[in-house]
Amino acid sequence: MSKKRIVVLSGAGVSAESGISTFRDSGGLWEKYDIMEVATFEAWTRNQALVMDFYNQRRKQLYEVEPNAAHYALVKLEEQFDVQIITQNVDDLHERAGSKNVMHLHGELKKVRSSVDEDLVYELDGWELKKGDTCEKGSQLRPHIVWFGEPVPMIPPAAELCSTADIMIIIGTSLNVYPAASLVGYVPDYCHVYLIDPAEVNVAHIPGVTVIREKAGKGTAELVNKLLNE
Ligand code: OAD
Image (cartoon, rainbow, N blue to C red; front, side):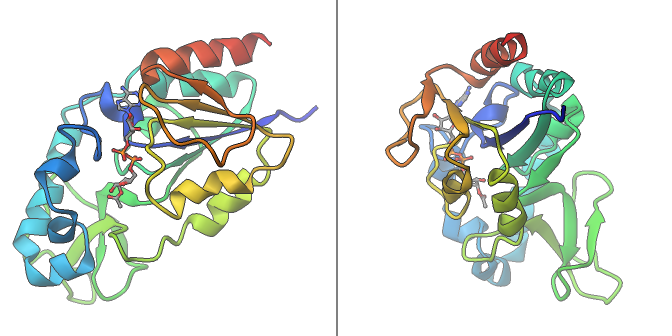
């Protein structure tokens, strides 16, 4: 018998216990920085140095943190399930914990890409992207991040995965950012949805959802144990 498929939709909260700030919590990144100044293409054309520095600092921090109990619990889930992770996070903590199938909706911090040809994507050597680092076509490299106002090319394959989910687990996302937040709408009627978050998240559009009001580390480990023992 083939394994049941679990689709995980993760957000910044899954990495919070690793020491990476979320965006919209009190003290979160969007309280310290103006989205329009660091996370749009217009910002990039206006002030490359500022945008580059913002992502350089995020990338530098990524080399200093480790996956946490939530990331590791999701790896354990693979013992019995076909686990597909769709993450809004640009960190690589799911991969470093050992998860096999990770899809990044909003890009990846450790990668950079050409600013004239989006198919030219490179692993950055080290944490610092510098002015004058160019792609093979000679244009400045930019962070491999989906900025606000840009298309999200991974949405169609992510929606396809959701449409084949037996179980969906949503962890640590305020579900404020679209189209990512709309993915739960693609799951079939028989799919049971769990949502793990210590704060109240609007779940009015998720029929039959089981809400687990815990931090990701504890909530995910407990849910994974329950699913593996059912
Ligand atoms: P948000 O900052 O909007 O939401 C983080 C969620 O994590 C909130 O619901 C918190 O309650 C929850 N949280 C905080 N600590 C937690 C913990 N220890 N365990 C579990 N949950 C915890 O972050 P996202 O929803 O991921 O996009 O934001 C979505 C997108 O908006 C991001 O991918 C990013 C951002 O702007 C881009 O930069 C393109």
